[in-house]
Length: 400
Image (cartoon, rainbow, N blue to C red):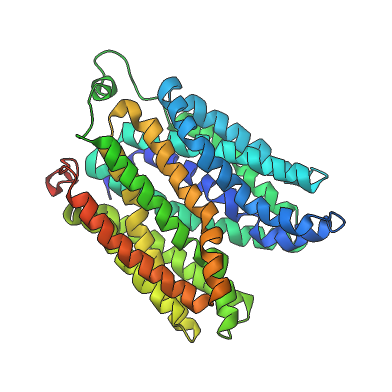
């Protein structure tokens, strides 16, 4: 067994990460029911859809500031404050009596998610070094995908009984609070400690540029990638796969592939390097988008989403790992916040960028366009990172 998995702190970090997947996905099956509950509200159609994107927008805006607070105040304070906000704001939809109030609670949920994600990402940089960070990010993405499957399926079951019940799932933050309090200690920053010594390091030469490249690549990746959950169900209907279960099957194929490849990517990253790993991911996603665009039956669509998930499993851990490895320890919170912000900004912008392509052409063209975008991103990232100073933390000799 990988020695990381024998470290209780790793399990605590993975548990914290699984909560963040629910910020958007959990209430998706409940949206039609919520709209029906508030049918007398003239803005119900718009507001119910904004319930999904509202947390992403807030995380994109707030995460860099949350990261700066994490650097200034320590990791645990923002983390557990975020958990408390998450539990209160996330479950508010159970009892709030207006759609506008629920929308405001979703904005508050974004504050909690921003604090949790930035603090736990900074703790990865504090607790682990070099290739171990990459492997843990892979395990974490796998946990997030498995958690997403379980939470969304549970939400669908609950929504069948009452559209408000999926909000109850956010209450998982309550029992997690004491568990994470025990599993995730504040890193020692006293005189002579390893953390204190690391804090004096200046990071790689030109580390702000490396962080900016990773944040930009992450944002552009999610602008294109998020067309899968937002547009693929309509594309399936267009090609004759109208049963909603088909959409669930192709999404499950993507999540399972992402979970598997996220684990594998942590082990192969020391050999592929910080250039080869994300470029491999972009090539896989380009192939997957092209396959989805030309799919004519369910197995081909599932193959396409599996390739997309595999590519995401290579790319997503690399973005945050490369940024953390490049930055000095005293800036890990800020760096985590910037990359977190880029993920959610891409999610928020995705429908705005992709919908015009669909409107003027069709879904097949939109997914073909996505394939071309990922091919171009692979080329640009390879050229850009090749000009950066070579890192020392990702060499195979340091892998465990």
